[in-house]
Length: 370
Image (tube, rainbow, N blue to C red; front, side):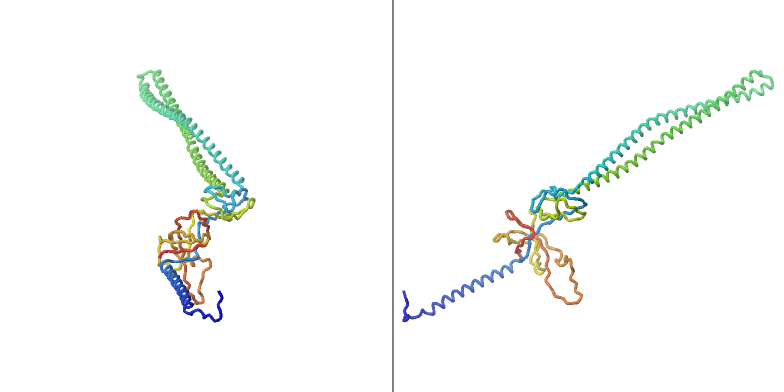
């Protein structure tokens, strides 16, 4: 249907009414948006630059050597105790075998000494008892010889004046003298026999003293054995350090060496982390810390998963501002000062991350209940 030039224009009231409705709707939307923004700012603490964090474990070498085994690669999932990297350990194992052979040699020497100690103990014990018996017998014979000599001497002394008065015959006097001489000879023989018995006893006691020397040698061998065992255990640790194993289950993030490469003590080898133990690390303004405490509920939006909101709670609040851990301090020698709001690091533990592959360093947004 065409409009002729003679038709009247549409009424201006209708056009103004549509404009007013659109403007009112826009104003309402703006007011609602501002209200929601204000409510969120009042009810929550917002952090837009938070990140997923995990315990990043850096494994290094404690020895020098050539890598001969590298069974893992970046991104691989490993279990606790799994072999990650092996360093050539032939020389270390030979030295360990040498330590073990030294321990066996010392043990054999100690056994030989113990057998010798038992043999010397058995031999000298019986000999010592025999020599003590001989000494006791010689002492008894000496006492008997002394008694007999005293009797014979007394008889001969009485016989001499009797002979002078011719009360006894000369033949009887000579018999008394012979008894005295024989008793004196027997006494000297008994004394000599006791001296020999005492000398034999001292020899037996000297032989018995070998046991103390053997015991001292055994103690020295015991100390040498303890030292050798400590060296063996230390070398076993060195052998074990040629194999780098996973301290816990996780994922290999980065490997810095290749098979056949020579590494040095303290050199960084690889990095891994446990993907089942991740959390959110956020730096909160110091002025916002008064609005929440440990245990406060938090909601986390992960940039990699739009529309997904994770629940969690604040488990730790840093004890110092992040500026205190800067590698380069910020002195103010000139006296010029610009006040900057400091930030404190907090940790948020997530309640459930099932089905999500959260990797350290991923950006997230955090909203903490006040």
